[in-house]
Image 1 (spheres, helix red, strand yellow):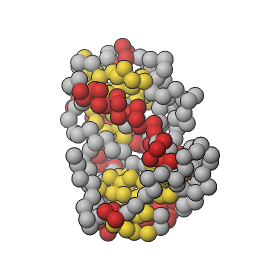
Image 2 (cartoon, one colour; image 1 turned 180 degrees about the vertical axis):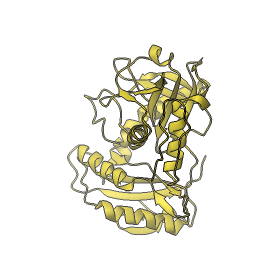
Image 3 (cartoon, helix red, strand yellow; image 1 turned 90 degrees about the horizontal axis):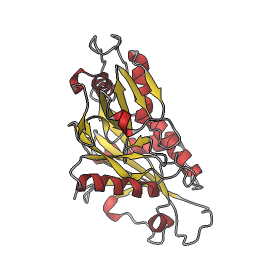
Length: 308
């Protein structure tokens, strides 16, 4: 198993910087017993200029606040203060290319009454892209996304991810790299921890909000496509249409942008390196390290620089 911390690792816990190995939480926490907590996944990078920058920290901490409020968890923290604390965690641990995990969790509570307080921890560790950097063999999962009438699907809540873990483990046990989940109507939704896009005739298509967690990286893909003049459509679609696509990719903070080789062993029609999706991947890789990017004249993209 991966080692996320050692005896020297420092975390931010409820206003103080403490050693991870010495930190404590209550084993009667409602979060432990019921998965009742919310979290974020954030990344920091060593930029082209050599400094350390957290990518879109305000957006992530605002979503953390919105998730907590959606789940009725008290939230008393200031975004700017949390961003400053996160930079301090990176500094104290001497890491730059990091994955950052803030968690808002509940106190001891074996009942279902609303809590009057909650707690926060910010952890960070070095981590390569979550799904690797090779094209993925993806499997349509028998697991579906939770019914949005049964959950606050827009909240990044810990308990929701039991669904993700089961789907991902099932796919890997069957020899695939990752799962793809549908919604309750068999429309394509998203991956266990990432949004998805497919490409057809130079245009990108992605599932709309409703049965997905509309991610910050997903929003960044929209921004990139707008700058490059790449058309993007949000709509519902089934697996059969997806299998006729030219290309497809996952995107998420942990995964970044990673292409697919196939879905259910059906390979996509175009060479990944000749797709619009590859251009989006390259643009994202440059954006997160604040490096200017000028796309090639191909796949319908305009020659236009993306600036951080």
